Length: 57
Image (cartoon, one colour):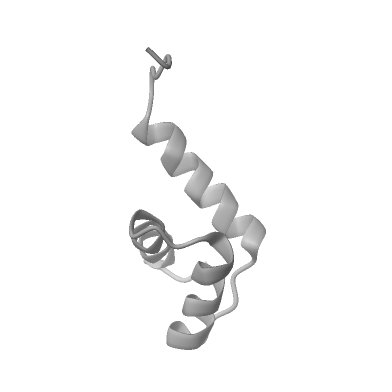
């Protein structure tokens, strides 16, 4: 993975972009291919970090 790419993915995700949109944006702007599986892995890790201890109450 290109250095800083994870931060770019997180930034796009925080703006509400979906996995496929993020994939396309990275390919178009940064001329680099990243799989949707990799993007999903990164965004799911962010989701877990951002909501620890959520119980639904």
